Image (cartoon, rainbow, N blue to C red; front, top):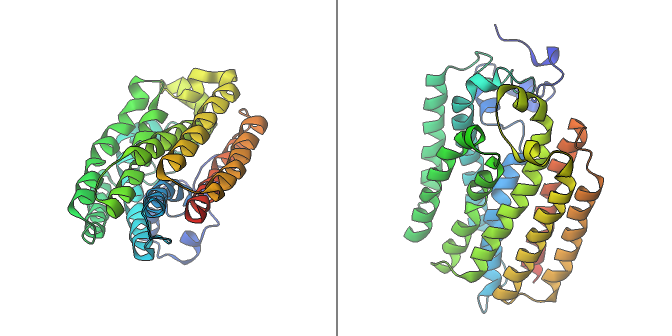
Length: 308
């Protein structure tokens, strides 16, 4: 019998979520493994996909609104592929997760799901992800499948480098390339700039996230930008978020967006500046709140791309 989440206040397993209230008992561990109870990761994976779609659509003459069907397909794809990525991450990190208070009650280290069951569930999610690609052009499918290389190597990076957040950025923002290619059929300068902006954004928000685990990570020998930057984190957030805004502005200019996009981007810049100026890196609750606030930033940028 695994330990209940209520007995560990540091756990990231929520005991008041609809998963516990409504999902059948046998299904709950799988939903938790896929992080259905913590959708922020899905949003942060999905929003760059929608950015790519919106920027590509806005850059084409005679087009106004992104294809809503593509928006739905990318939402389903982000949900299942984020879940598959979490399965892989938890399989690879199962020994470490059991030694960290925040992750000790996750389904694999707690014994609710075996490694074999997790692999089978991951395969099921990846099959759905492949089916989502069928309506898109072949090039978009090839670009999407290529991201699996990054998904596979990411969990290993925290063992060998203080920059695992960079590799997360490579993986989490790959959808921007897929979204652009799904509309245009090829890659070009605006989406490369957009992809780089997403990587810088991820370096910022995941450094904030990593501060929740910095003491445990240091104790068990894992690396992160939070440990590398330490008390200098706030300075680095200004650097990463400043690069994010600059690259987004350049991407919008290269795509020929109107002044409305840049007006929205100013609002987004204010949101990032608020994070950088007010972050308390020694408060896990504040770090989590600032991390979650990046969904708002993502929607501000998306609205600007559509308006522009």
